[in-house]
Amino acid sequence: MPSGSLTPEAAHTSTRIGWRLALGLTLLRLALAPVLLVMSTVKVAGPVIATVLAVGFLSDVFDGVVARHFGVATPGLRGLDSTVDTIFYLAIAYAVFRLHPGPLRALAWPIGIVLAGEALNYAAAYLIFKRGAGYHAWSAKAWGALLFVALLMLLTTGSSALLPIALIAGIIAQADTLAITLTLPQWQSDVPSALHALRIRRGAVGSPT
Image 1 (tube, helix red, strand yellow):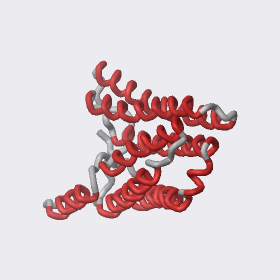
Image 2 (spheres, rainbow, N blue to C red; image 1 turned 135 degrees about the horizontal axis):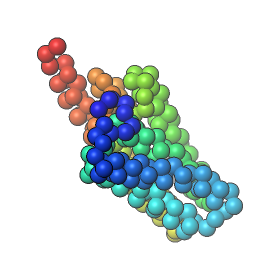
Image 3 (spheres, rainbow, N blue to C red; image 1 turned 45 degrees about the vertical axis):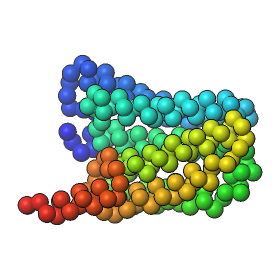
């Protein structure tokens, strides 16, 4: 399939259904972003925001599961998934800030580092590969899970105890993503870590031309 293809080449009915389901789950998360902005503007209660967060998180988990199950995890679909993740979690961050500004202000520096790392990773990927990163690395998945639990706790109980741990994981994930971008010989999706990227680079250098 083409390196930047969003849709799968196969025309089987099950493949089309799987692709549409995976895409639908991804677009559900995208649709929830403006909903979160509206809800935060009218100061909807934290547990309600937490419910939207949970729906978005589950859609993030299962769009990849569905795509892999049906063999439709195209580079374009995986790249879209990463972009939608960023939009959704920025909307969540804004909603949380409107409800709990104190804990977020107290963690302004690590939050700023994570956001700067996100921007740097997008810039680096576009400069080197002309497209955004879509690696779905292990570190990014761990960060996503920790961030989900930390925000869920903050929204439902008001406790920000896990947020510093999630932000440390976020900084590590951003560094890992940048290392992957700087190491890969060419863009590809689903690179578990910088070590895997190094192995891919060594394989590309060692392969006959």
